[in-house]
Length: 278
Image (cartoon, rainbow, N blue to C red; front, side):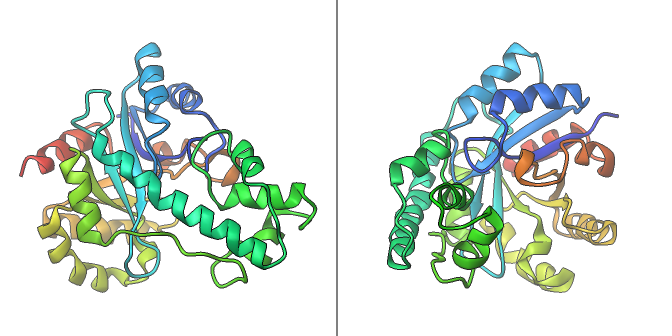
């Protein structure tokens, strides 16, 4: 059985491969389906859908939202019912990141790092701009020698210029995704820092708000944690999913990760579709 990868990133946010290149690579890796989930944007989906049609490869449009909740809490929206169009409800999420970026630009300036906003946008290639693009601009302008130095001195959480994201509350984000016809899936639940018991205690409210699944298989999660998540999914009637969280050259995880570490195939898509209908 071929596997699905329901969590990758492109140049539309902080990945290094274009949406069409991702589709070609997924086909080459013998995946069964690929979902593009860029951060706070759907800008790459039109190209992604087009590449899927041209290469006759199954794709799912999606996105990843950062939530105002414990630890690092991200929510995937997977458009398993989408017909290749982009719901207008999701266009609003781009404002979350734009507002944060403009505040970050000002914070850097107040800390002696005066960057040209137009140059930062050029470095991002016209996609969703994030901290890696600021870091590259800082290296280019001579403020830092390397990108890791830029993060360590200025951009990482707790550093002098860090600016937090504009994050929706869980109930707000879950409602937004549901209204757009996207299945909400909690991404890499290990990053919330709640542990298995804490997560289980949180889920009743989230399922009431419309949560459809949990990302059981992810590179940051051990096999033991993944099995615990699968058991939690059975307990709460949620769908387990798998994703490599592939970012191209910006992270070491290969696009073959889900193929090699997850047992999940295309049945997952049918289960998410069913969950949306409940």
